[in-house]
Length: 157
Image 1 (cartoon, rainbow, N blue to C red):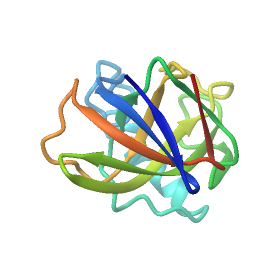
Image 2: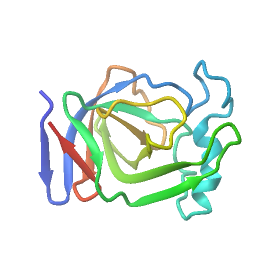
Image 3: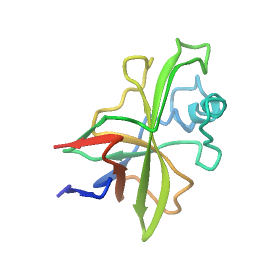
Image 4: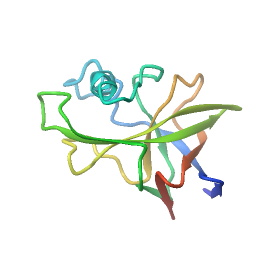
């Protein structure tokens, strides 16, 4: 059962690691971004004040179904980021998170390209894309715990 708890300002929700489109890491079938979208976007976020260099250049996709999430007040929102000539500028939000796996805890960011400005590779509202340092041993199908600030992300269901 997927239960969420609000502990102070942090909400806990259980999820399962799923395969994504694999464009963030550059390992998917879409070869337009061979370096991976995270590596390509990182300098644009850095110039706006968010340093993603400590994090793996790909996303950890965590499915929290049957629950879903919505942005409330993300820590960072960057509008009209022109990071590629392949499509129009996109909006991105970042919310703080912590990922619990294998007895360890990893601080990171929920990475949310806004669907209304995104060109392709849409995610369902049950899937959070997480940027964290490399998590040793994590595999598709593994259960993880996420903690997200209640002020930044709303968990429903």
